[in-house]
Image (cartoon, rainbow, N blue to C red; front, side, top):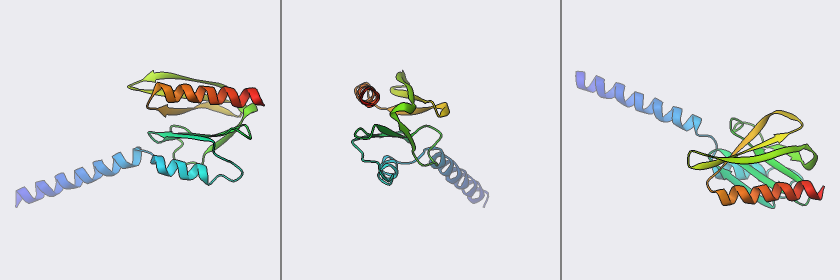
Length: 133
């Protein structure tokens, strides 16, 4: 009888740990892409998602949409070329994190990348968006 109680308590603990892990994980890549596609007047030319963060570009209109760390419950933030002030990335724990700063937001947005090449590509996209405007 005592063994059943111990197993039940352990099972409940595992379920709570699983629920907490799922809650902190953030949205899936598919969910992030769906949010970008739902933006009206935003034509996606490039998109990226990793570890609950994402970024999409509308290069024709000179805008980007960002879902940064900690903003997974919010809609994507739209930034025009004139809003972008800085963007750079750094290596962090076997992946890369890009910070995107905006004139309209006090906090920088942080987007995660698996590979350096993908982060480099986004540096070029940002530069092209800003230079064309």
